Length: 236
Image 1: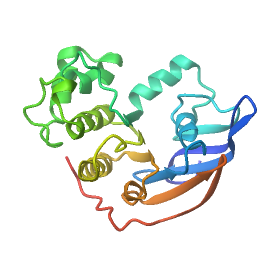
Image 2 (image 1 turned 45 degrees about the vertical axis):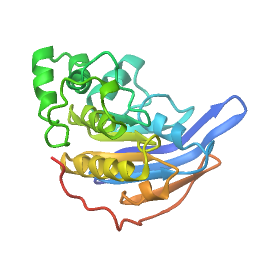
Image 3 (image 1 turned 180 degrees about the vertical axis):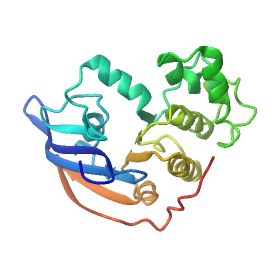
Image 4 (image 1 turned 90 degrees about the horizontal axis):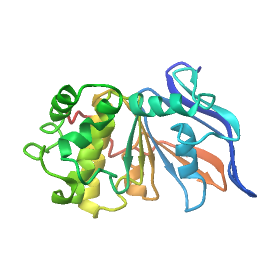
């Protein structure tokens, strides 16, 4: 494993029938680094995220987390890894509508075997720092889009993951709310020592990251480092 690298994909190939979604992709993410993956629809960027996160297995190549092979794990092992070492933020939050916000945040802990009372207590510690104080008992339908994404960010970070994956995290938000959400996501991840991998089509979202890589026709183009907006501060 390259020094400082937390997550690495080497020679990743993924096919869907005759369509080659990934064609020999190499990507390494360092500890605490925020990387944006950009590209047009159908370019392979979400497939790359899914392979890196252990959601799907590549047809060829390998994925390692801190030097440990992810792609060779059984589904049960990969599921446990996704609950404990990875965090996820999706475009529409994917919060459970029947649960209050604090239980949505606590869910990864409870799935990992933490007793409910202790998991909820730990989840509550995230609400004040993320600007959600007083919303612990509200259900997703009672939250604004930005508030729901902050709950999703808390859920992604509550287990102390090595890497947080965000797939179009501002896609359902207006520009101002999206700006606030990215600030919260980037600074909270950095403050908690998590690397961040963001899939986006929005250059303004990508500007929050240390590095941008572009996927075209399943291949990775050379990246660059436009990061004038990245503050690296702590939200927590």
